[in-house]
Image 1 (cartoon, rainbow, N blue to C red):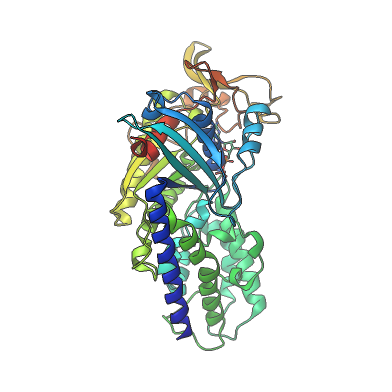
Image 2: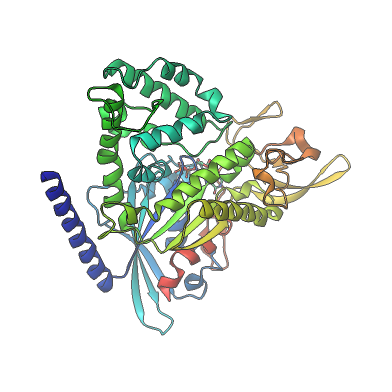
Length: 490
Ligand code: GDP
């Protein structure tokens, strides 16, 4: 009973906050933009480039408010949520622009407020507040757990772990699993060792050789200060029948901890952060998945279906009646497009679009407006035709970071190198196909020996623009901005 009362009080508190925010946003128009993506997808770089471009006047011809001179200025302001760490914009810009190295990646949630003064199309002076919320995609993948019982999650996770290439990576954990009796007495040591081996398996799936994406519970990959607590000490079990779990059993123990994980980790994230977002961008390192092969591409599609499902998750949860997700625009972006020749940018977009279409069908998604863009928040390369023997090959040129090795050469971080990234397939279905013909990763057959596409490149220098202000080069960042906030600056 007390549980029901506390849930009712929680709902009332959330409704009050939602109403307060709604009223406040009428007076001070605000967009809360969620930026997410799996670790390494490019969130930190994206936010830094976007804020730098808005504050310093980036070259954004497609971002209408800036291109037509209606954007007067953008400035940072204190963020609204005191308990959320601030996005360390200044140190990230220093790393990128002054030191020309990539900034520290996202490890946890952070927030940054940008206030944009602009002239409306009718000539009135207006202000839009943009609250950017940066959070790990691993947290987003956890939201579907809210609608799953331990038994459902357990059997789905097991099924997935028996498919290639996961089965190989799961072998240690599977061996441990075979020794466990779900109906036997609860056993802390059994829970500890299976949780550890299960976590090792999830981490192995993240390795760039496999680049798997559909990995839950996401916080097992990024536990923060909750590591080692019982809410993090559970794993799937081989269950022969549906519940209820026998009293005092290992099954019951795992089930309890799974529910605790949802209470301690997933629900707070949903109500404190996700349910308050207006717009969402999901960054995807699709090139990493292509390079790992069709299994990784299918896995990514699976993860995207699960993410799309999240945008409906509120309707089925306790909070659904009062605080459903209010996101009305979702942008999926394939990042690091500067690793490809421009001829492949549209192809990258087409493949991601196909992936989202398939995922949307799987997730029975309907709701927010969705778009897909291939972009590079920061462009580290330029293009050139480079002669190799008798061939003239379209190549990209950049400075590999110090210590990167390719073709027997160790780079010093100062010297340019030409790379031959190869073409993406014209048919957007090819990357999904396990018998995908000649398409394997991005390898350019004519220049395989000089294929430097996995090299980490140094960020570029600022480049001068028509306005005279130096800016960071990018690919299609302005299109992303136009989709995400263009309509709110009319
Ligand atoms: P996060 O974990 O999502 O915050 O990822 P980061 O933003 O830290 O990006 C991870 C790494 O990807 C960076 O250190 C860069 O090496 C690379 N990266 C991210 N964005 C870009 C981009 O636009 N162009 C290039 N060339 N590399 C990028």
